[in-house]
Amino acid sequence: MNNLEIIKESQKYMPGGVNSPVRAFKDVTINPAVIKRGQGAYVFDEEGNQYTDYVCAWGPMILGHCDEDIVAAIKDTSENAIAFGAPTYLELKLAEHMCSTLDGVDMLRMVNSGTEATMSAIKLARGYTGRDRIIKFAGCYHGHFDGFLVSAGSGVMTEGIPGSAGVPELSIKNTLIASYNDIESVKLLFENYSDEIAAIIIEPVAGNMGVVAADKEFLSGVRDLCDKYGSLLIFDEVMSGFRVAYKGAMSLYGIKPDLVTFAKIMGGGLPCGAYGGRRDIMEKLSPLGPVYQAGTMSGNPIVMAAGYATLTKLYNNLDYYSHLESLGARLETGIREAAAEMGLPVVINRVGAMMTIFFTELNEVKNYEDAKTCDTKLYAKYFEHMFKNGINIPPSQFEALFISVKHTGEDIDYFIKTFKKLGDSSFR
Image 1 (cartoon, helix red, strand yellow):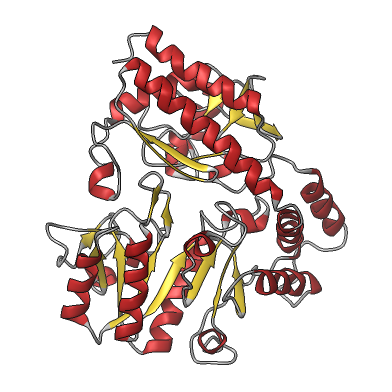
Image 2 (tube, rainbow, N blue to C red):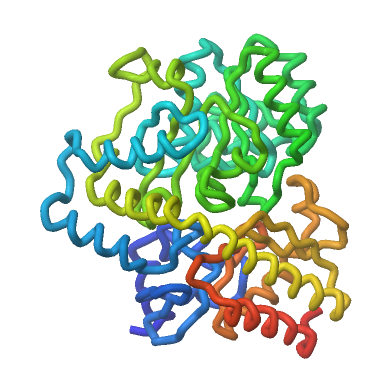
């Protein structure tokens, strides 16, 4: 079966033919490729077409597809263990490695996804503080937990309306919305709900309104407000953890959260997540404390083996991050120069190996309101041009593209060369 035949057949059995909405290519006019295999920086579809991959499974494949050490760890473990629902030495190895190499992570709890990590961290923060309300930021995505699926109305004081069908208002009544990179919006919420706010959850480097990094002064202000009012600060590093730096965005800013969530990279491409932080907070979790959270497959041995292989390889090769920074800078500079030559209005936001090209007339994109000014139809044309020329990038303006250590300078140059060819077409 070819790509289109598989997609059409899949639509009979899965909503939209996919198991996650963005895979449906809903915002563009071409059909998705059905990926059969990946190797290094490349993926191949069912028809044998090759694509240089800048999606990287939405971030996890920092070591490239089918890294030999990760594959070996999976194979070796699977010969003796699939699942037990019981303690294993492998989960100790990964937990010990993370706690000993990350700042401010005294203890952690393994889970199976980023959504599970963030929703569990919120529950723990509420249990620790005895408060119910949380603050999140417009444009930050923390998974599909009901309490996070909120659309802000006019003004930062709006408590929010459900952002998805199936989410009752009762589920989001304790979620307050602030504006990213706007400390005054956070201050206003604390002034009105000072003793009710359990925690602030924030992506220090946002990735789902496109890549938008927090200003250091803003993030420091958020930390200070949490300290002042006795609320916890949760960094959602599901995307940025181990990617923008081994120790995540918190190491770039020098700001320590009370809790931090991880996923994506830490499983080596397998479903995995974790949340961790200060010992006194983490000890509130059952079986030590009153906050109940469980998971039959949490700490699955195969996943733990893949995660340990991934994180130890990254930690033992920290020069990978300078390589990723070099490639990212080369891509950013090339696209910026090409866009200027074509008279194409874009803003490029990049942190290490995460980058977004925003098609907007603005001079900068600092928050969700800025991101919403983008020309999504223009982005769709750009996406289709790149895809048809063998470059796999996110099919949405509001996502990040990722670079792996297996990408080469030649791959980056081909991306820039292909981008420049937009000027030869009726792009605008």
